Length: 185
Image (cartoon, rainbow, N blue to C red; front, top):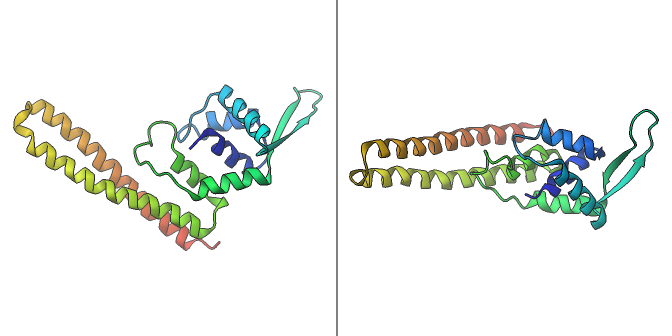
């Protein structure tokens, strides 16, 4: 995901100022995507020049003037194209830049079928990763005689982290799929 798609998604929810967007990324969204203020304002300017956003300067008496951004039809098309083509990387959860979770956050913009497709894609990637994860334990056992016991213990700790994280992701996605399937939309 690029920051611009996240910004488009937030502005698609409602028109916002750069300050409001910056605050959202610093407070509410920091666990799935981190961005500096300068990056946010730079992207807003680029997107306005590209025709994805328009802005309106709002004059205020007792506060500094503000610039409110709204998404254009061209911006909505770009956002929907991005939403419809998920890149799913199950390793990005702790990087502060999780494109998949940002898509889920903006899932109200998708049809029920599109949202389910996104969730099913994530589940499929996790299931493939589970097979890979099982191979890691086999490789550790195979190479056990080549390393000190302490090293093997830490190799196994890393493998355990992967297994438990993957298990939690699979449990989450199964619940998410059920919730969306049962939603009256």
